[in-house]
Length: 208
Image (cartoon, rainbow, N blue to C red):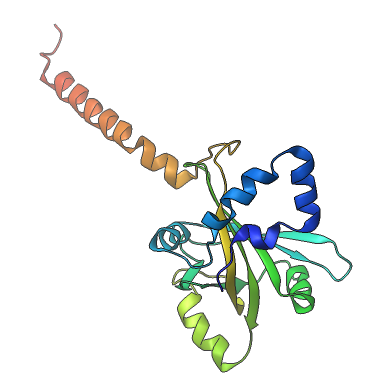
């Protein structure tokens, strides 16, 4: 049975707040149209362009924890329409997310595209493979070719549901690569003008 992001996220307490704020009718009407649990080529292409994401887990004492994961563009792989994965690189060795997921494998991911003000939210279950044959096979697929940091394990996330957030209040931000791409036409124009200026100066007769 398919289910959507709101089927999972809209708990009785959430419904009570929605009713108090007068928005419960809106979300009840849209609920059936938002049953996203399988990636389309659009989500796959969006994931392939990401160089970071945020992942939330919950501790045994109920505290939420959010971790940033970054890498080369495309390091978060779409393995099939309901599975994504990445090579878990060595970090500060606190292992908070890993410990949390040993207790409860549920995760929430935010994938951000700041220039286009887009945000993909994913709910799923995390699965780890470390120091075994599946880990070695998965890391062959998940590890980015130019990555130098050692990978400690392979992480798979089995998608339960996802949703696209509204663009409101997402401040556009740009990476160095994106800024360079935006200004490339201007750079080429300046380079051409400098060459033309040099040619014109060289063509001028010497002053007497």
